[in-house]
Image: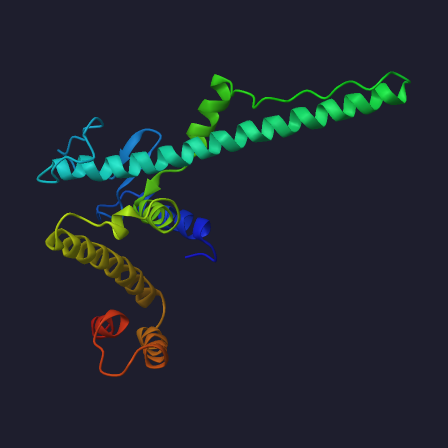
Length: 224
C-alpha cells in the first residue's frame, strides 16, 4: 500500500473511495461534498450525535460522522500549517527588507512579533477543496494516534462493563482482519495464488507459534 502512513492512507482512498463501489465500510468516505458511496435510499444525517445508538440506517450516519470529524481534524491541521507557512514567509520578507535597509545605511529596526496570520476565505476554500476524502483507514489511524499518544482513556479506563470491552475488541479485530483479508484477495488476483500463499506461509512459519490457528494462518485456507 505504501512505505509510510500517509502513502498507505492515500492509496487506500484511491483504491476504495474514489471509485463507484459498494463495499462498506471500506468504500465509504467523507469528502468536501459529503458522504461518498452511500447506498441508494440511505439519508445521511449530518447532525447525528456520535453517541447515538447505531441501529438501522442511523448506523450509516454515525459512520459518516466519524469520517467527517476525522477529516475536520486533518483540515484544521492543514490550515494551521498554512498559517505557519504564511508567518514564516512574512519573517523572511521582513528580514530581506531589513537587510536592504541596513545595506543602504539605515538604522536597524526592532523586529516585530509576527503574530500568526489569518487565512483569507479563498485560502480556506482552496485547502478544503484540495483535501481528499477520508476513509475508515484514516479513522483507524486517528484512533491509534489518540489512544497511543493523546488520550488513552478508552483503553486504560475502558467501558463500564466487561461485555462492552469484549465487544469493542471483537469489532476492532474483525475490522482489522477483514481489511487485511480483503487486500490479500486482491493480491491473489494479481499474483499467482501459489506465490502469495508461499509468502504468507513462510512468514507464519517464522513469526507464529506452531499450532496457532489465528490471523494469517486462519486466513490462508481461504486463498485458494
